Length: 112
Length: 112
DNA sequence: ATAGTCAATCGTAATATTACGATAAAATCG
DNA sequence: CGATTTTATCGTAATATTACGATTGACTAT
Image (cartoon, rainbow over all chains, first blue to last red; front, side, top):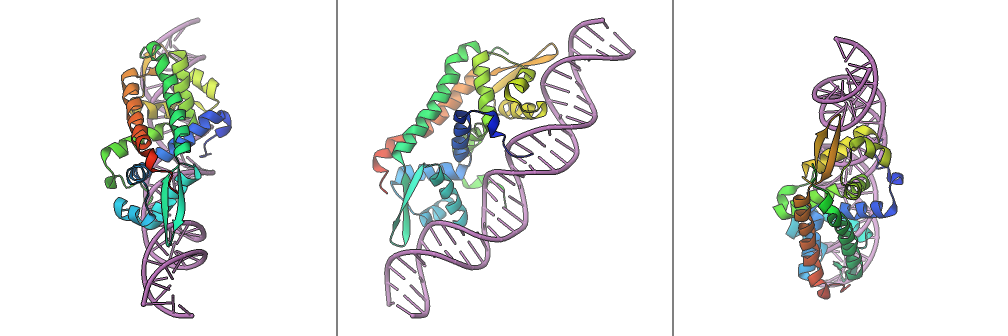
């Protein structure tokens, strides 16, 4: 008990849920917004910007990296992170499809 | 320790994270899709459709209801659920704004 | 009334997430 | 080289989520 029963759902549903999980924490939203506004950044800057501990930021960055949403490259003693444009577009479309599907049929809904 | 530090973030970031949480489980995605495709449904039908226990479905439905994404009305001995159209449009725009903000600046990104 | 049906809620076990101190690993500087 | 800086990882405590059996409450039908 306790773990999500992924076998009951199709891969599109499981994929979307995993992506949504990435957005399901305000720190990760803030990280993505900060990356978008600053073209590049380092972990250290984010620690000051967000007010969470360095280990915590690093953990959030790893989650975003594992989903391919961001990528990083070593820059001397620090690390530059930025958005992964191709992946980002992919994800945007995935959400758009989800919303479109549920919006098209809306005329039939609101029945209760 | 362990709880999300919401005070570090603004209300737009916290709001979006809460909404994303609703989509962060395949069962809730499946429920929303099923509601969109069938115009209305009852808890019992979802139990057969999804293969989760009745108590579990009811719990997922409550979460969606608490965010205003769906609404239900009693229909004899069963309950009809449907999407909340107005709220849905609101949420769709909230996500679109988030994606747009991160897409516009993308030309500057992908730098690492 | 009594039995039956359906969904909500309670209680709880299993698992996942969040946060952070401590430590490690890698590069830079003196 | 040794000291410093920066990020990743480990270990772990606190909290949240997921799932389900059991029960309750509300309505229906007999």
